[in-house]
Image (tube, rainbow, N blue to C red):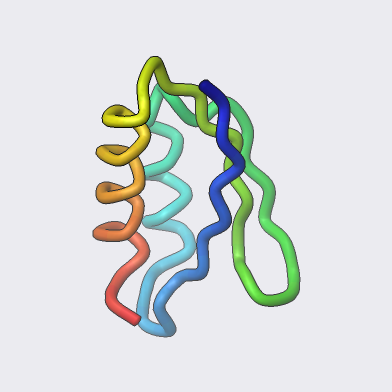
Length: 66
């Protein structure tokens, strides 16, 4: 399964820290820093919906509270 995940960082979140964390996730195949409503778009590849849910939870935790 492939998904494009749009990420908006919390104002206090570190871009550098987020980017370093995303590089450790083997399921993230590509990432782009974008402008507009979100800060990043990530191409994520997972085996199942449950795996994608886990990745989304980790990304939410790393992106910081809104």
